[in-house]
Image 1 (cartoon, rainbow, N blue to C red):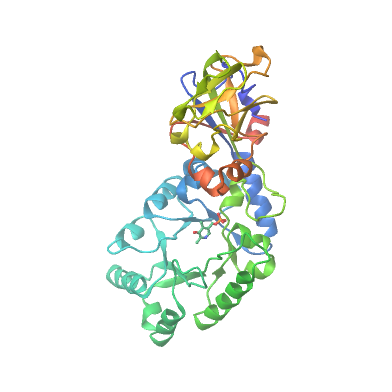
Image 2: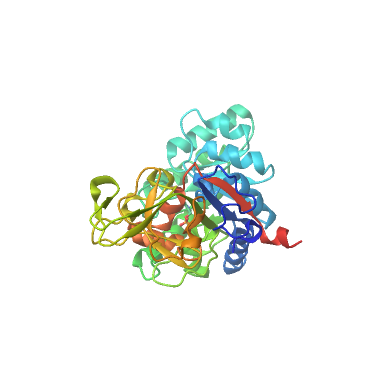
Length: 389
Ligand SMILES: *Cc1c(COP(=O)(O)O)cnc(C)c1O
């Protein structure tokens, strides 16, 4: 499962920094496989990749070159700062910035050949004015709102573009996009409403390549694919569509080390708030990851509650007590003593705990689990196909 890393339970597993408290492993081969499978689903549409929020916590500097190697040419980020990171590792890529154009930011886009996704008339005016001053019609996308009410042109803004052709003549419109609000729910009536208002808006604009589908949108079928699709979450292995099995490969594994092991007596309490009182003699392992590392406090277990489980191989170690900033405490009483060693790794995300499982337990979505992954982890990138050579 962890390829060249050896047994993750071993404190001396190869390539682990002995001082690393927790190790996040990202499988780049699985990321590429996910990209290829989404591209196949998208048929003739180009498959772009959304790599905002540091490629959903997996590390854009490694994820972007891996995706480019699988044939991805177009990347979407949220901010110009993220676009700079993508440009530093993908000199040829087309990069769109979903936040659009902030006042006075145009030169920053031009400098790295990034394209703003323009979502209001003032943004369009400002990009046009910058192009005039630069003496060049620079490319940008146009974002029409079809029901999110977050970013993008409202129908009356599209009217303004139609009545004043000068607005679109000063730059090079290269793509028209919109964003689905309910793509994770294939039965939702909003999907078709948004698809048809996207068609209507497109019909009023110059003939441009069109892009509507996020990950969930790809699974809604060919009517949603248009000329380009732009998946995020499905690339990173978490659930894009509710209520059906998730066909994507998991790409992240999180292992954290046991710092200490102790035996406590019935009646003693564990952790903050003395929220968990022990009903039996309990062997407690303290594991080096906490809420500052993205292990949400909701995953703890006070008296009567069930929270996250850690795993030592196939042995389950349920969390007991609250999640601390830097640690959790797990019950290892029923696990063979030779498996439970100071410095050993326990699995927090992996074979036994998918990102989706953890999201469900924490009452959130896989997106939030991935983008909350901590900055303190040692990050290890594996690539099975390379390792096999
Ligand atoms: C984040 C985002 C995406 C990617 O969505 P996923 O559900 O992760 O596939 C696509 N388009 C826009 C506008 C976004 O903000």
